[in-house]
Length: 46
Image 1 (spheres, rainbow, N blue to C red):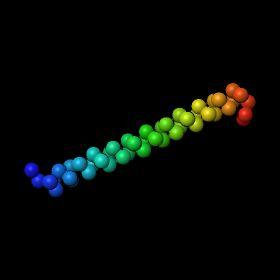
Image 2: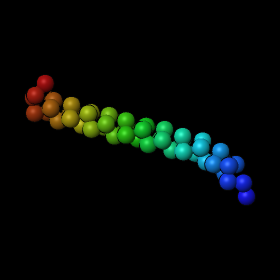
Image 3: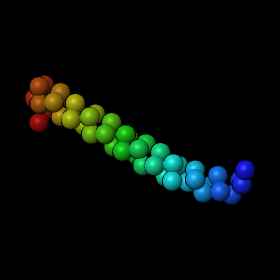
């Protein structure tokens, strides 16, 4: 098996994984922000 070829095949997977991880982080941040906004509205911190 050619190691170089394997590395080339793995690169797109790694790129995709990084993209998914950053999207997931962004989504988590958005959820936390909207939760904070909701809470602050409820207790009148707006």
